[in-house]
Amino acid sequence: MFDFQGVLTWLIDSENWQGRYGLPNLVAEHLSLTLLAIGLAAIFALPIGLGIGHSGKGGALVVLLGSASRAVPTMGLLFALVMLLGVELRELAVVLALVAIAFPPILTGAYSGIRAIQAHVTDSARAQGLTDSQLIRHVELPLAMPSIIGGFRIAWIQVVSTVVLAPLIGLGGLGFGIIQGLALRNFEQVVASALLIVVLTVFGDQLLGFAQKSQALRLESSSGGRNT
Amino acid sequence: MNWALNNIELIVKLTLTHLFVSLVPLALGFVLAVVLARITPASFAPAVTSAFGAIYAIPSLALFVSLPALIGTDFLGPTNVLIALTFYVISSMFFSARDAFASLPAATVEFARAQGLSVSQRFFFVELPLAIPGLIAGARIAAASTISMASIGAVVGVRNLGYLFLDGFQRRIFDEVFAGLIAIFVIAIIVDISLWLLGRALTPWHRSSRV
Image (cartoon, rainbow over all chains, first blue to last red; front, side):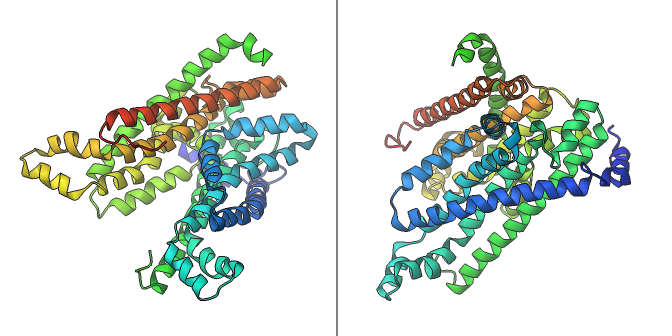
């Protein structure tokens, strides 16, 4: 059976907590790359998704992009961009690749959240005299919130998983322990790193899932549960 | 383009391995998801759904290298990749499979029961055929992500199309990486169309099925 004691020993060894490839540094690197990419993607994807959902024009394109993007291997996209921009610019290339990976799910989440709102809801809001921007801010955005967070959940999973591969192109992040450990046949390091990655990703996903559920519950209670 | 033409034999070989390590988990995962969706009692369904949701959130490379510690397989080689991808397929399909069975027309199922069909007859001749459109829709989503995710198996020594990424990057051959991207995208689309055609063939009463 596998030596779990060794994994634990590796995890509490203070040597693995220091320096450039120490765990705090790798976690910080992993998180900052992930959050930067998701944030940048959201700046573009949210307004576009809300706009397309609101106007109804270009919806087919969103659906196409959403399904086509699933067939693009993130590892290939990452490597190709680093090679195109050159190894000196690899940090920029990685961020660009991650933004490209986070963009489709956030876009699709915003778009389908708005499309799922029933016409009588938006019609009655318009009849009340709401302008387009008021309608988006006070009606469509809150109603689409669970779906928008759902898009962020998928983006989180995709981007965090791709950052795991960053050591293959000479960057850090928690995947470092897997890649180095496999090369050196240090399997305690491999499993310990994998364990930390699992904890980080599942925790982030559950956090977003919790936010998604509480938004959905809030909508249900404020509409008396009828307006689903 | 030249690179791909000069190395067509390698690409074909890698493609076959790639199809093997993605289609086997897809088929296994499909059957297991259908079985689990059918036998999980309603009171357990939310718990099972969130458990699979958590598995789905695990990055593939982390899952590939965690399995040896859990079940004693070798760190390198296809076994972990096959098992991990099967889990992802089940995770991605469980919810849609439950949904497909939950939205069957109740009257039809009742009618089958009234006709005296046994549980297994009802399942194979009434419920499963009627659930096919929903199941195929779920399988198409799972297929695309499984085929693209399988490439990460190359990092743990599975020589599939992902090998072109690793090798091309190390040897600074952009065309090799690009060939890998295109090949994976193309087989994902071919499998997607095949699944759509399969769904149509299995539901001849639905002649207006959507793309």
